[in-house]
Amino acid sequence: MDKTAKIYIAGHRGMVGGAIWRTLEKKGYSNLIGKTSKELDLRDQKQVADFISKEKPDVIIDAAARVGGILANNDYPYQFIMENMQIQNNLINAAHELDVEKFVFLGSSCIYPKLAPQPLKEEYLLTGPLEATNEWYAIAKITGVKTCQAIREQFNKDFVSLMPTNLYGTNDNFDLKTSHVLPAMIRKFHEAKENGNSPVTLWGSGTPMREFLFVDDMAESIVFALENKLPEHLYNIGTGIDITIKELAETIQRSVGHTGNIIWDSSKPDGTPRKLMDVSKMHNLGWKHKVDLEEGIERTYQWFLENIENFKEVKL
Image (cartoon, rainbow, N blue to C red; front, side, top):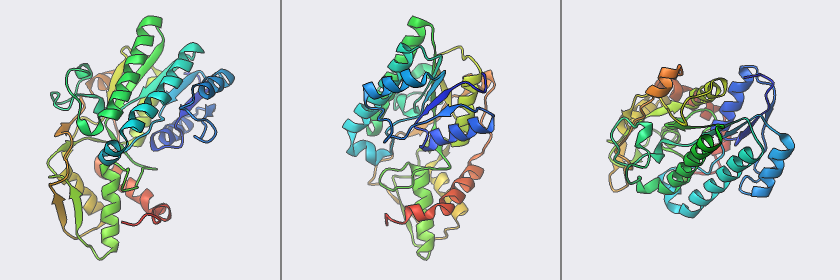
């Protein structure tokens, strides 16, 4: 891809969008555009169409979404399904109508059935019921995948969907009400350490298995998708390696330096028992992750410490 190609990154202020922006800049891409949610409401169809018509990007990367963990998905089901569909539909439709050359749609591993065989292959999509705690977000993302597939098949356009596993890293969300498990644990262990190594209570049994990908590796996969025409419409993005939530907690505890007890609250839900991605399709094309989990946690915790003033307003 030409390094001067105009690339619009929707959601460029988020953890994923920010990592994509940094990575593209490092690789010499010089014509990146982004708009804050105040400048452009992606839920507004006319605003999105007018913006794409005016800017005429060569590429759109959809890293914009309403996201959150189990608690947020349970508390705000309507917003999770409606706002995500509005955002992606407006971007996909504008890209199609205005002949944008390439569209990269980002989803999540939660699109796959709760009890699908492990590791999760792309072809398992829509073969069984979803995990109830995040079905609203998952259904929205599935519609995005299928819409991009429809455009690809009907109009032969280069629209591709990448489904990352659990992401974490620089610029993560550490708000305990809306964050995912890894950044929530970093904050909990850090604050417990500061509080005389008090015990840390975590949800569930600790037995579910999860896979985690450092966000900069996700950004590298998007650059790979931009620089190569991928032969299929859907690809898993992950490490192909998973650990138990208990092992994750112990790894973060060591990294943070917390020496207190961990208490598991088994009255709280565990979520899906296991979610490991089969990433062989992307591996076979030539992309593979570079940052292992311990290094990624160290880098994420360092960023948390450097930005801790931003997290002090909301106390436990």
